[in-house]
Image 1: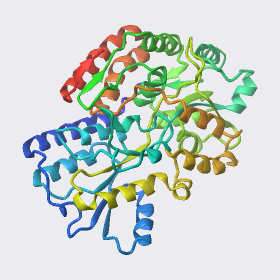
Image 2 (image 1 turned 180 degrees about the horizontal axis):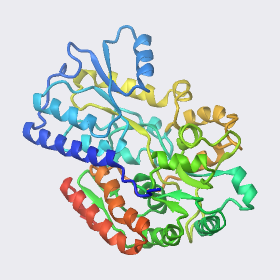
Image 3 (image 1 turned 90 degrees about the horizontal axis):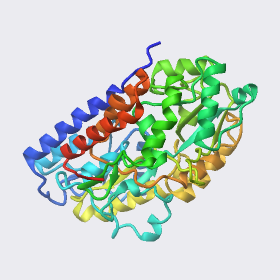
Image 4 (image 1 turned 45 degrees about the vertical axis):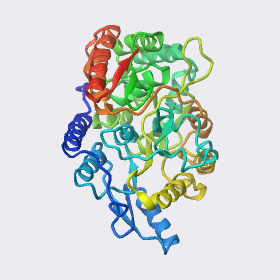
Length: 439
C-alpha cells in the first residue's frame, strides 16, 4: 500500500487564495452603499448547506425581515475569492457569511480585504464569555473579535475499546505511554496504527496540542513562528520511533487507504477531532458499534493538563459594509451561534458552552460508542492549547508540513531536521501573506 498521500485539496485552496488576493489587489476595497449587500435593504446571508435550514427557520420567524439566503460550497478559498470580486465592484458583499474554514477570518479581516466587522461593540461581553474558553481565539486579532464560532473541533484520543482489551493495553494518559503502546502494538500486531501524521491531522493534533508556535497570531500583520523550543522538538522525538516502526501512518484519514485500516481492525488509537466520532469511525472506517471510545488527550512531559489541538469547526462573520443592516446581521449571527435549542441539534460540537452541554445529552446516550464520550470531549473543549491562530497561509501551513515533517516520517528521515525545513517554509509563506514573522 502506498502510504504517502499529500492532501491535494489544500494545494488547490492555496492557488484559489492567491487568485483572490490578486483580484482584490486590482480592485481595492472601497466602501459601498448601505444596500450593496442584499439590495433594496435586504439582508444577504451566505451559509453552507448544513446551516441553510437554520437560516430559513430564522427568516420564517421574522416575517418582517427582508432576507435572502444563498447556499455556498464549503470549499477552501471560495469565500475570499467571491468577496474579492465584491471588492472590485464595490457591491454584492454578503452581510453575513459562514466560514467552513475559520482560518479564512484572518484573510477577510485584514486590511487588504477589509470585509469583517469587529464585533466587540456589537456583541455584549457577557455573550462572548459564554463561548468555550479559547474558542474565539481564532477570531481574535490585535485584541479585536472578528467572528463568532459556530462549532469547534477539539481533539481527543479515540481508541478501539475492544482491541485495547483483547491486546491487554491500558489507555495511555501521557504521550510517553502512548508511544510505548504504539510501538508494542506495531511489533505484536503488524499493520496496527495509533495515529496519522498528514497535513492538519499531524500539525493540528500533535504540534497544536503541544503548543508548538507554528501559527501564533499576534495581530493581523504579525505572527510568531518558532519550531526550536521544546514544545516542538518533543513532538518530533515522540513521532520519530513510531514513524520508523510504522505505528503512525502518513495516509490522511479521509483517504480510502485509511478506511481499509479500519475495516482490517488495524486502528488501535487515533488522536483526532471531536467530529471523527460521528463522521469517520462508523461511516468511513466501518468500525462496528460498541467499540469506539474517547479519552482526554495524553499529557506532555512536565504538564498535568491534557491540552487539546484543533482540526475543524466553523465561524460566522458580519460584513463591515452592512451599514444600517449591521444590527440585523449581528442578531442573526448571535442566534445562529448561541441559541441552545438550535445548536443542540447541530451535527458537530457547539462552541457555545450552554449549547454544548445540551448537545452532549444525546451524545452520552448514543449506542454507537463503547462508553460515554462526553467527559473526554468536554475536557478537551475546555483545554484548547493557546497560540493556535487563524492565518492567511492555512493551505501552505498544511502543504509545507507534508513536504517536510510528513515526508521525513514516510521515508525514515530525521524529524528534528525536518522541523528546520518546515520553519523556513512557514516563514516564507507567512511573509508572502503579508505577515511580519517573529520568534
